[in-house]
Length: 330
Image 1 (cartoon, rainbow, N blue to C red):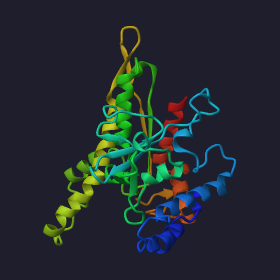
Image 2: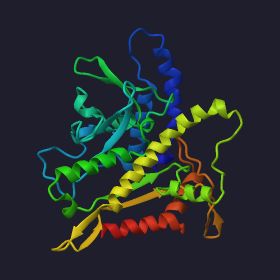
Image 3: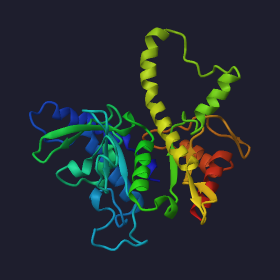
Image 4: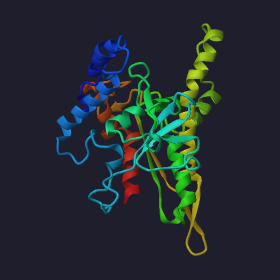
């Protein structure tokens, strides 16, 4: 229901009016289009969830898990968020989380909340990791003296899945928590809305296709000397994400934990489950699913129907993922 709301309209209005007027003013007095989309998210949340929802997007980001002195129970438990942004200055990750971390725990990443002079709203923390190029400006990160120490853009510049951060968290837990491998079984659920992503084993499948003479993935020959450097530069972004996903999946599935008194038995360290949108036409209950569900700033009825069919219908792939998740949770 929330994704049915219009988020592009307020953003464009912010661009055409306050943002444009601000360009002619010598000092900042008007909110930019990033503030407009954050307010649109907040209003949509209240319209759908109600003003008395236990968590609101206007809440202080670091306090959405409750006060530190309050006992943690199943009734007030909230997950920790790790929202990935990208540094304009270095290209590294800037991560917003309620959990404080050091550089050796999440290598080459900065703790945004530990470096900001004050807390931010939940909507702002989310927006820091989703700043769509040119639709929104880069976020400015002020220091204790009020001067900016960096700007932050969409986390997808670095890696679009967030799998690198998930891998770092798993590695830190395994090294820092006593007997982690024997006491806990991590379950990683990846949800991708990229219809071009073909799954964690896509490169293995591509290798098989090439081996059997299928060259349908080959880049176009037209003006290739001009286009190839730029095309390769752009495609490395997706490749980094796929590599991080595969490394995470292999760690969970191929790392074996010894069980029993003599360690005679073993099982995988954890479980990796992925849900994705399929861009190939599939027959579902006598109907053909949309080849590429139209995703946008306002989720259309057609997109929601197509996604629901892939997630909840007879489609074998996501149905298997749901079954695997249910089995892992029991």
